[in-house]
Length: 135
Image 1 (cartoon, rainbow, N blue to C red):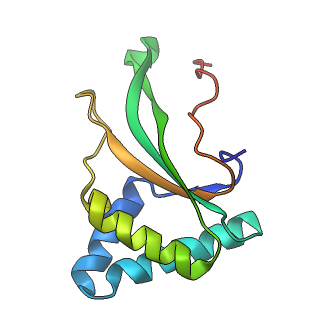
Image 2 (image 1 turned 90 degrees about the vertical axis):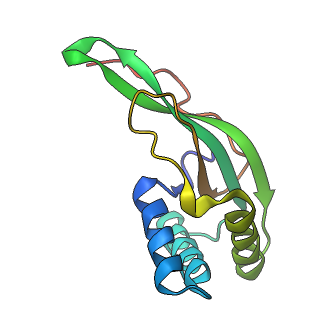
Image 3 (image 1 turned 90 degrees about the horizontal axis):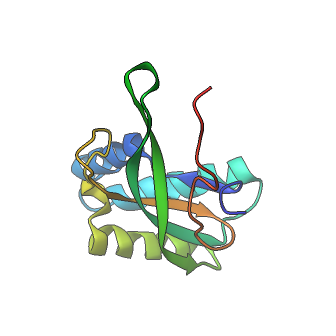
C-alpha cells in the first residue's frame, strides 16, 4: 500500500533540501518539509500517517540497448505520525541525524546507496514489488 500513497524525496528534492538549508540556514529544512507534507496531502487526498525510509540503489536490469538500470528500495525504518507538527519535527530530527541533505547520487554503476524518505500510509515496503522487464 505504501507505494500507492507515498510521496518521495527523489534526487531533485535532495538538492532542493540542500538549497533551502543554504538559503535559509535556520528555517530552510522546516520550510522544505512543510512543502513536502502539503504536497503529499494534496497528492494522496489525506494526511500522511507514516514516514518511510528506504536504502536505495540501482540494480542492473539487462543488456538491452546498451544496458539499463532500475531503482531498488530496501525498507530501513517506518515512523508513525499523528499530526503535521509531529511529522515536521520528526523529519527535522531525521534530516539532522541522517544527513538527508547530503545524500550521494546513485545514478551511476558504482553501487552507491542513499536514503530515500517518503510520506504515506502503512509500513515501508520493498520496491519494486516485482522485477521490471525490458519492453
